[in-house]
Amino acid sequence: MSARKYDIKSLPGFLPITILCLVVLYAPLVVVTIYSFNNSTSITIWEGVSLRWYVDVFKGPESAKFKIAAWNSFSIAIIAATGATTIATLAATAMIRGGRFRLRTVSFGLISLPLMVPEIVTAVATLIFFNSIGFTRGYTTILVAHIAFCIPFAYMPISARMQGIEDTYEQAALDLYASKRQAFTKILLPLMMPGIISGFLLAFIISLDDFIITNFVKGAGVETLPTAIFGSVKQGIKPNIMAISTMLLALSVLMVTISYFVSKKDNTK
Image (tube, rainbow, N blue to C red; front, side, top):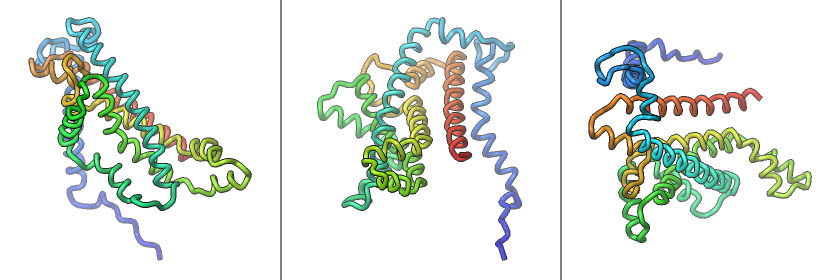
């Protein structure tokens, strides 16, 4: 006799609690998005639909600052995501396909530790490390810090994907006289690609949106989009900040959508 499936929706209060959670999570994002199209200079008074603040981001008085900050953010995010994904792929291969070795559990704990440590602690520790070795803070320190911080985030989907791949494929390739490198590059790596892409996209978004670590390790005159937005907000919230936030939100949604369809396409094979 098969067990009856448990319907969580039958619990009392399920629907109201669900609606409340959705409102708390997404209502601020909806408000910011709507008011980014407001024609008024006020962030509270609605005066009609307009794209003036999106134009202001690219051609307004602060456009030069935001363009430099955007270039820094995107270049750091791409390089950091690429480096973190590469290291995470190698780490996942060693942890999952490397068999048993000494300190394997410790190694897994070290990879996962940044996910559990408060980000402010990581930021302070990174700052102290750079100061102790006499490393001048600037673009490079942000990049190094982001690579280190993004590795665990890239590792999660990559390791999850690799754990779902049986090693029989590689064994079959080795039995057919393929080298270990060929078995990895021709068999395992293509099968891991959905996880690698998801890991890259997650690391990219984490790096692009990071503020706390960036604010600690950046040097004078070096800004990313989060730190530039924070600097502008300290002088008062302006509608152009809502436009920038909406564009970043749209980019995040795009990345999540790409990751979803990559995973969905792989599952339909």
